[in-house]
Image (cartoon, rainbow, N blue to C red; front, side, top):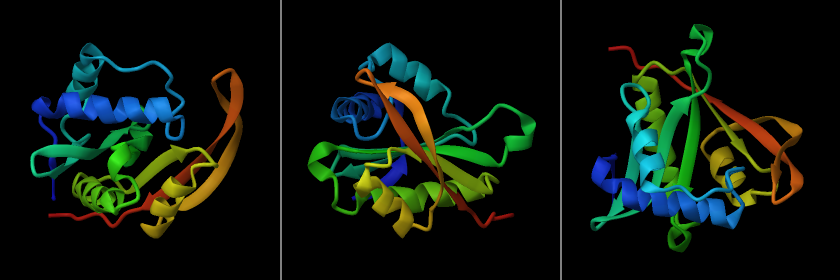
Length: 166
């Protein structure tokens, strides 16, 4: 398996994996399935410092991670928001850890000093992965969003990075 920067030709696979996360209700407050138009617009926003990487197993994309803008204010230019999604058939096999390791290096090289993420408190698999990579729980937002008509809490986590200056 290789971890590499995503290409536009990967968008169908990225979309499929993202939509699995939406269907499974364990990784996002999103409820609407994403289509090709949405994904092309999303991908266009991931340039420069905001990268998308994929886990490629013999030509098949089985997971992806992205650095997303956290806040448009200049004071937060050193903070990136993180997304990580793994194909259903490949969850729990170490792919998320490989993606995290790579995206953290990319973030540091692009002068982000911190990565933040938001997860559901009941997503034990995700939290285990993040804690293993050195993320810490910052706190829980009560009733942060609505999923399937019910309020859900959202946990904030963060990791401080060592910035590589060339």
